Every structure is written in C-alpha cells, then in structure tokens.
Length: 312
Picture 1 (cartoon, helix red, strand yellow):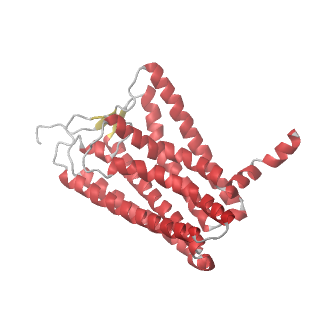
Picture 2 (cartoon, rainbow, N blue to C red):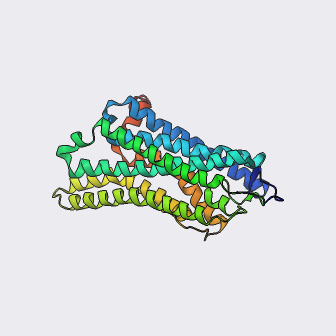
Picture 3 (tube, rainbow, N blue to C red):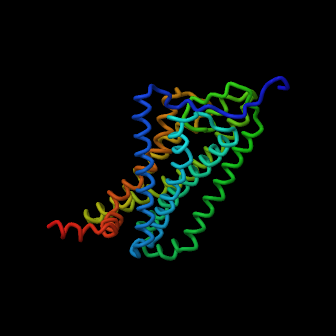
C-alpha cells in the first residue's frame, strides 16, 4: 500500500449520455425535485395548519414528508450539477452522502413501520387508541428511529473509513452508495459487506415484521366487519400507506440486501432512482389522492371552494 496513491475524489458517471439526452434528464430530474419539495412542504403545512389533522397518523406523515425532502436533497442537487458541471465529488463529500443515505433511508423505514402500527391500533384496538398512541409514545417512536438509524449509519460509515481507495475512482452511479464504493476499494471488503448485510437485514427485519404483523391483524379485523362501507373506508385509509411501503421496500431491498452486486449499473440506478428520488415525489401525491382528510385540507388551504364559486 505504500506505493499506491490514495484517492481524494470520486467521479460520478451516472447518466453520462449525449447532450440532448442530458438536457432532457436535467429538466426531468429538476421537475421531480421541484415537485418533491412543493408536495412534501404542502403536506407539512396542511397538517400543521389544520387542527383536524393533529393526530398520530398525520404526525408520522408530516415526519415522513420531512424525511422525503431530506432524502431527495442528499443526492438530487449533486446529480443536477453533474449534467453540466464537474462530475467530481470529494472523498469527504462522498462519505457524507453514504452516511445520510443510510440515516434518512433507514429512518424512513422505521417511520413507515410506526405508521403501520398506528393503523393497527386505530383499527384493531379503537377503544385503547388514545391511551396507546399518546403524544409521548409517538415522539418516543420517532426519537428511537433516529437513534437506531444514526447508529446503523455510523457503523457502516466508520467501517468504510478503514478502507483504502487507490484507484480507479470512477463510480458508475449518480450518487455515492456503499455497494458502489466497496467495489472500488483496494482492500478486502468482506467484513464491510457482512456488516452491511447484517445491519440492513436487521433494520429490514424489524420494520417489515411490524408492518406485516400490523397488516395481518388489520386484514383479519376488516374481514370480520359486516358493513361493506366500513370495509371500504378501512381499506382506503390503509391503501396509501401500503402503496408507499411497497414502492420503498421493494426497490431498496434489491440494492442493499445482496452482499455483492449482482445487477448491472443500469439496474442499480433504476432501483436507486425509485426509492431515493421517485418515491419521495410520489408519497405526497399518493397520500393526497388516497386520503380524504388530506385532500380536503389541501383544497381548503388553496381556497378551492371559493375559487370554484367565483368561477361558477
């Protein structure tokens, strides 16, 4: 290792195409990022300004919107500058991206699990809902999620700092994610891959167990209902959350649950785009369309009724 040069920066080659395609991608990702910011900020403002939405369900949804803004902001601004600026990212900047992708991504997984537990409590234990999902317990869930995921991100990031990168320094991806960096290390990365697999498996197992157990109980309870209207209302309440869970976990698991990269760079980029860029944009749209209370609150905020009356 003494005669090898340590890498001080990396080159992000993601979406290196001809100028017309790059222009199209630049405007596409700019639009996605703008919609992500506006949509999630709208959800946060609506929940904060509407007293009818001051409940545990919307407390978690507001936090999810905040995480979506953060998640998208970790990678998209740098991605946009890569189209017409330098594709370089410093070593420290790359490590920071790894840390925040882990931190925000896994925190979002736990928040989705907390939202599933909230729906389970509301539907299966309605008489005890207020006592169980009190404000102290909700804040404890969110605080615990941040604490556990900070530890998870720190473990994987610190183990990455022990590696030496002596070239090549080209990442065939649009962001610094741990699987891409491990492939460039000059040192043996077996322990890093095992650590990645164990920690990600633990996070996925904990969050997925809560989500699956909650939905099994919810479905069991709904099937026992005699009223068709009650069944539709209950499934409608849970459907938005279930769609978001599928979008997030379905793609993130392909990227991180495999100890070695078994997919092409194009497939890796597709999965990363889905859970780190597309899902944060789609979340507020899904909740706005599928959740009646949010839809009505947004209409009220933008003066939909008064606007329609003026038009009529």
